[in-house]
Amino acid sequence: MSFLLLFAPLYLGGQNLQLHYDLGEDRKFFTATLEMFRPDSFGSTYWFVDLDFNFPGTPRSMSATYWEISRDFYIPWLKENPSLKNLGFHLEYNDGFTAYKDSGEMMGAASYNSVFLTGASYPVKIGNVQITTQALLRMPKGMDGFPDFQLTLVWFQPVFRNRVLITGFIDFWTQDKVLEPDKTEVVIQTEPQFWFLIRPKLGIGTELEISKNFPAGPKQWQINPTMAFRWEF
Image (tube, rainbow, N blue to C red; front, side):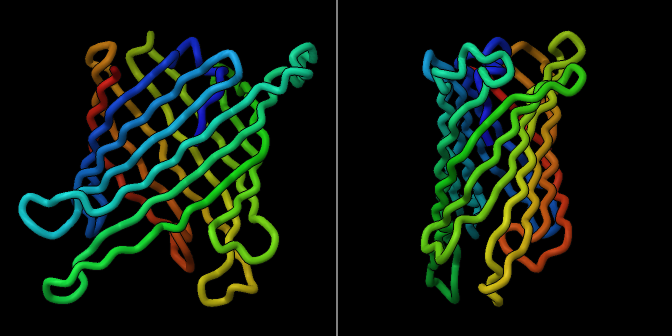
């Protein structure tokens, strides 16, 4: 998930902390998200960290963490081309792990597997909504063969005199099937967010975590809503 300088006037140097309570079936735990976007003269940097608090016990401590960091670079020789001046070169790295109680008092841990992505990003305007599109090659750790493909759409749209924010992303990517590694499957993941700003830096809202075959199939569509708090700083 990444923002381009396209959003700089709305989100200049933005950093925010979100606290979500997951209402999905068999979930019911808190997730904290720390997010940052920062533009500069060469492009923009975006990262976020998710921390799940679902480890057994009272109160429940952190059980998993997931991190994404991405960088978009301007392409200098395209700046004079009106149709291509916003085309960017995109680099991204994703990683994380989870901890869990195995049997008895034993504790186990598992990696989400690191993934490196690279490709192009380009802003598109649909009506009044600005959307960043990314066409990426997806290279997970231990990749055997050709890279997978990922298409990402990202949006950040204030409405109603900036009292409501509609943000989020949708990812489509291909990956090898776990039980049939010579075959591929399509994974879909989207997380639209809707925020009502009580104050310019304070908001309440919700996120809908919608996915299919995530993190690996075969899985039917999953929809997990959250209740959330957001603080911009």
